[in-house]
Image (tube, rainbow, N blue to C red; front, side, top):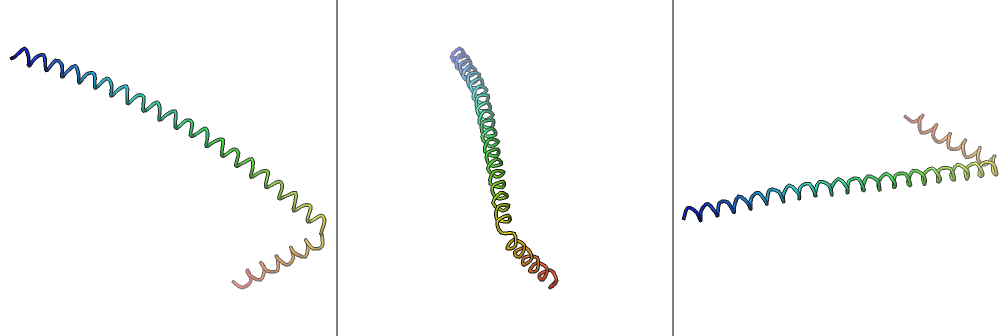
Length: 96
């Protein structure tokens, strides 16, 4: 009976050691996968921010060019509009 008990304890210890090794491998694998996913996500995010930044600059330059063309084509209307906006802002500030 003692031999049987010793053999069973040896088998349990062996199984526990195998489980410990498997858990260590699994933990390392999960950590590596998480790091890879985080790195890929960071790269994608940087790329999308760069695209958004480039698009914003492009739209801003287009708006600037359109405003320049409008002011150049209609200088008196542009001056009148600017003066009207300035009067409205001045009146709003004076109310306070």
